[in-house]
Image 1: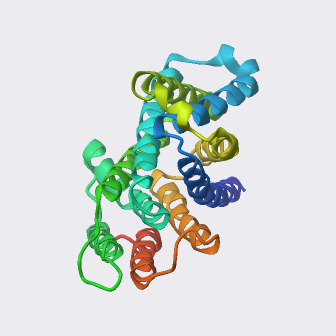
Image 2 (image 1 turned 180 degrees about the vertical axis):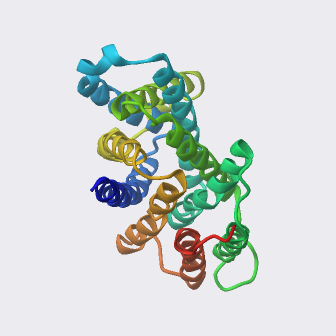
Length: 297
């Protein structure tokens, strides 16, 4: 009976991760709308995390007395990584396509085992090394300019890969942070930390950019990012990671790349090219096989 309950919780956690991935996929479209409205990365970050943190604070008020020092430390570390991941993602998306950004962000799943290796000395399986290589192959195909064999890997793509690394660190950190913790309090601390850092970065580097932003068109997108892609999704992710492993969560969450690219093509934001299809298939196949293939010790 106990094992059945655990299996049910694990399946529910997996479904939550897929739901989060779908919402995050739509978040690429919302981010593009905000970018097209001339909103800077710092402004988008400050607004989305401030909104998410305020909503989460209102929900968590009755629980604040149970906030522990460990929750603040672990949630704070997760918040720093969360800020870095999203900031580099938005900067990257400003200089590349939605599909490139979505698929490259998804490569965080092949990075998680190597981070666990660095921290716990648990060497990844041979499967991980092989699928990491195929993922890199997919990135190479994705970077080929349509109609030629020249590569178009640019600054935006590089920033998005940095974003993927930070997301991998964030997923691994959450796996440890949620052990024996209240997921709502962890989520509150990480969102509040990201909100404070975003506000400081905006005020120090980009305060004058707000005047040039078209808030009428960009603000609804940022509200969606704050309420759904941030507040709701990170609560669901933090909840799900109490009942699944960082590697499993990473695989399921990485399908945001597939969702983001599909939304982008369906909504007409970009055309469907051969290298986008082939590169995307190689990356997604590598990511899914990372979980589905058994590992040989």
